[in-house]
Length: 152
View 1 (cartoon, rainbow, N blue to C red):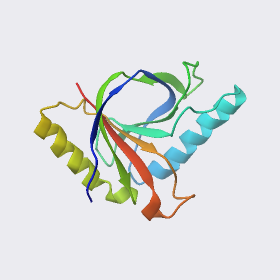
View 2: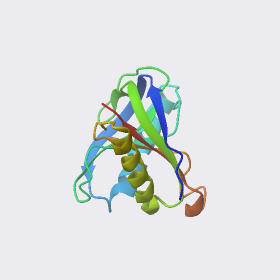
View 3: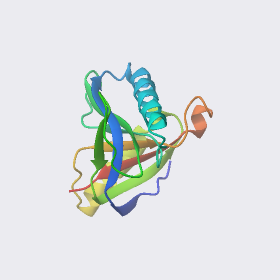
């Protein structure tokens, strides 16, 4: 697949999220639980997400993933319990859109990693995935995932 890789400037983005450690096998359940809790909290305070849900991966240890699951929001809100107020930092980032099953996204990661190295950029080590639809809404072949690498 040919990926369109873009270099952009990211403004500060407030988020509400839950950070946890889990195995890749348990990730779908953890994502569903975290998104459900955050949406319930947003509904309680009369707010909506301002963008697609995301997962931020702080490592790639498939047995012990350090992952942040959340939603962009229009402004900073107080967190509650496991739900923390935070932000996606401003700065340069590289991104591309992956269409298809989540399991096939390695090709997008490889293309982006090669592009970043070729251009001499240095990634922060965190990878974000923004999910524009879900397997409950569309066939796997139609899943849209924006992959983002913040840069140093």
